[in-house]
Length: 507
Ligand code: MLC
Ligand code: AMP
Image 1 (tube, helix red, strand yellow):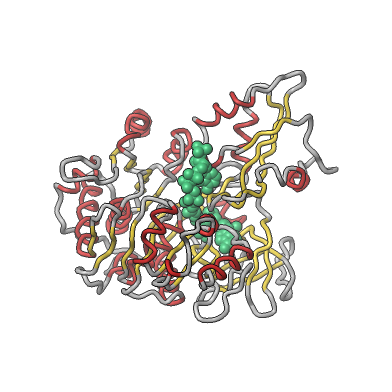
Image 2: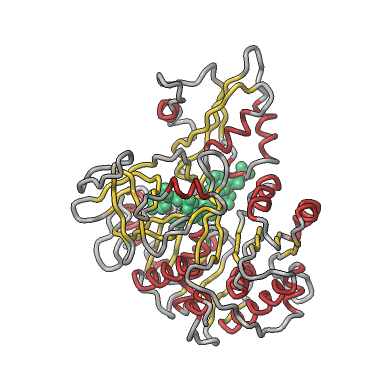
């Protein structure tokens, strides 16, 4: 028996091919991928990780963190990556909810987590960024170095879990999307062929690796293609510009592209060697698409995905890439646009709920059966919460969201989660959190506070209090104090009015 994902991604790969090039000159070959993932898988087993167990990780971006993901896959365990911006209370929720056997954190955060993991009975290891032979890159890395490069990869079935990725929820409680081996493998296969990846490609990897985009779309597609990547710690215009001449593909959120367009060094000559620019995770403005083409001669390929579904649609590789659309359903994926209330399919051109079904769609939310049932139709379609239409040529357009969600620089923020914390602050009667246009991040978070009668709000203190409880990207970029919130006759806060009123505030 095989391991569906590991063998599916790596079978037949030439071990001598380059897998990753780091900015410090370090090179990783596919042989290293086999060896280091085996070493880490041996460590996982030593720590008591068994097939089906969760392994949570909040670690800085490094190629070793990718090896930890692959080690989990090889051990039949379930990888649970966490945003490095999450604070200790945010991480505590995930550890309590997912009950991992092992949690791997940044060596710099070990003291913050030791007492918590001891209390929860979770083994704690550390993994940092590798610097040199003389310096430790954490306990996982040290133990890995002392372990064998041989590991008997655990056999898995298509529907065994490979990962749980948490997405925030409209109630303020995050939900763990359970992704199977086949969810991930089928999407990687589809994307490789749709975007025509080959072993000649060099991906410029500047995304974080704790989300679907940087982890599965980028890494799995590179692995299954036997391609290589220039593996950067994050997005910085300087390093992108330095490395574009040696790359063939860039995957990014729209902020990558607007930032590059703001830089005069970014021009046609620089991207001569590039084959493809891909955008997703947030809407790409048609204006950005047009400016990009005028500057570089390339048309950005926009695609649409979700944590729960991997990639759903993509603009075509060879045919016309239409600005303002996310293209066609990927092969094997079915998309329908329905009336959100009645679930009746709508004619072309009409706006409704986007629903999706296919091998890419997750199996449900971790230990939330009721929530899972609410978000699936009886015939297996997943209700995305995105509103859109299918135009006369079959291109899908996303026109809005029925879920109260802000997408800022490609990160999701559920207002409810922030409102719950704002409501607890001294002197606050109630709050509303909205997303308004932000030149760099697309949308930016604004907090609107109503004080209790006769209370004076100390907004600076409230902002300071948020720092220990909420990841920085979720914290409002601006806070406004008002006497009352606009409400409709049902008593519901009219966020659309607030968004209109404060539309210019972050410009
Ligand atoms: C950073 N900050 C953000 C932010 N990123 N605030 C709001 N939204 C964001 N996305 C904060 C910083 O903490 C900092 O706070 C200030 O804003 C300025 O930061 P910066 O230095 O300018 O940001 P930078 O580190 O350059 O990061 C920006 C970014 C990054 C766009 C490169 O956010 C990013 O990599 N985003 C990609 C997210 C992603 O991969 N999403 C995929 C989800 S999967 P201070 O302290 O200075 O005030 C998915 C499915 C799919 O959606 O379809 O793909
Ligand atoms: P996440 O939960 O982080 O996976 O975010 C998924 C959400 O990102 C989707 O439900 C969409 O609302 C949004 N999204 C992803 N790709 C695009 C895109 N190309 N255009 C507009 N929205 C997108």
